[in-house]
Length: 116
Image (tube, rainbow, N blue to C red; front, side, top):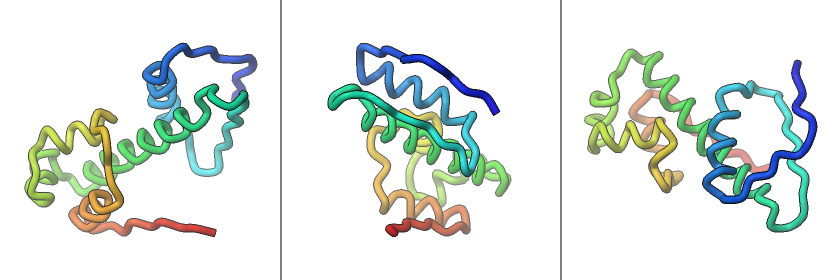
């Protein structure tokens, strides 16, 4: 287990999202991150970016496990390989729940959204 101490100061949302994208592959189920700061510090921006990055990584992982290329997945989704690439590399600006449902179906997987 490792810890990062001290503040990380980022000037722009794109830097915050970039940090989230770099941290996302390091996280595992059960990991906990503490985001601390005043209103407007970028905590929500970071959290949204981290969730998007983890989803992107999971989609790529499932696709590879099913031994599908991005092009083959794109065909199942009735879209282009570039769209799949953008989703998997955190470049797609807005992956909706409907899109996630379609991806899950195309990968013979389940999408679970849980409110408790």
